[in-house]
Structures are given as C-alpha cells and as structure tokens.
Length: 208
Ligand code: ATP
Image (tube, rainbow, N blue to C red):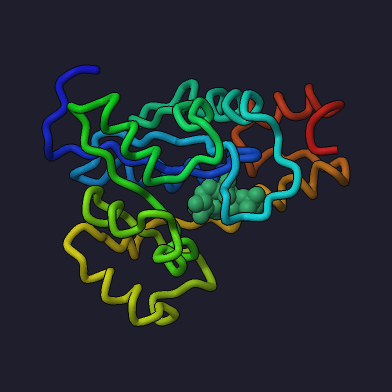
C-alpha cells in the first residue's frame, strides 16, 4: 500500500450510493485536495442501521456503479467493499476498528454530513470514534451550524473535528435520480455518463 506517513489521513466517505452521483464526486474531490488527506475511500454501506431504508440496490451493483464513476478519476479517490464484507449489521466504529487492524500503517478519518453530525451522539461508540479518528463535517442544506444542540456544538470544539464550511454542495440526491429513472427520464448530467449508461443498460432490473 505504499508509504503513508502517520500524518496523512485516509478519509472514509460512507453512504448507500444508490446510485453514486456528481454531488458525491464533487465533495470527494474537494476533500481529497485537503492538505492532510492522502486518499478518500468511498465506503459502500450494506445498510445504515439508523436509516429506515426501503429497497436499495444490491451491494455488487452499487459497488460497480461507483467503480465505473471513478474509473478515470485523477484524484486519489477509491471505492471500497470493506464494509459489505463485514458481519451485519455494520457499525461505523467497528468498521473503523477493523480497517485500522487491517491497514495499521494508515490513519483513518471519517467524513460525514452535518445532518449526520446532529445525531452523532446516538451512533454506537460515538466517543470511541471521536477520540480515535479525525472527523470532517461538511454542511448539508437545512442542517446549519446554528442548529447544533449544545452537546454537538461542544464536540465541534474537539481537536479531532474539522468543519468544512467551504465544501461544495450540489443540489443532487440519489432519491431524485431514482424518481427520474422511475419516470423514464435519463439521469445524465447528474451522474457521470458511464454510470448513466450502465443504469440505462440495466434498467430492466434497476430503479423501476
Ligand atoms: P438518498 O437520496 O438515497 O438518501 P443521497 O444522495 O443523500 O442518497 P447517500 O448515498 O445517502 O446519497 O450519500 C452518501 C453520503 O453523501 C451521505 O453522507 C450524504 O450526506 C452525502 N451526500 C448526499 N448528497 C450529496 C450532495 N449533493 N453533495 C455532497 N454530499 C452528498
């Protein structure tokens, strides 16, 4: 895995990515360019135990779409299947613990949206995550810094937490893309073209 200094962070960017879209990629590129960040790993999650997800596409398909999206990517952004291979349900703390065991030369950080940060204290082993891994928070519209409860605000003062107020946010969501597809409209322009092509080629089984 090369020579990675202890200061360089491998930033875990988790999500369902059903499908991956340009908003995800724009944000991943932005964080990949931060001075302390060595690599960004898109961590395709099997299912978020706190999110009442209805039907999501299978792990293989979501991994495939993310891989297609990043095929010619120049920024150090990789797709990881690590969490899909863990026993279910998966929790971020456990994923980070196992990642650190498997890649002891790397220092793993976590990238989350301000929406998730607002309920971060409800995450399993939140104090463990906070004390062992740097956390980068990017703003999501509707979840501004002023909305933080006092507990969350004081955690922001934690030395391991960085608030990325300049992170770029595109007004795109996977939900919107899925509803376009269900209405027979191409997602081109919202996802990289090869991903849009893949979805349209597999439309018989995807997002109907
Ligand atoms: P869905 O609409 O299915 O909830 P989503 O578009 O929000 O999906 P997720 O798979 O939940 O995508 O996203 C993974 C991560 O990417 C989440 O932590 C989410 O905060 C973030 N994210 C979602 N949309 C954007 C966007 N437009 N720009 C930057 N980050 C985003």
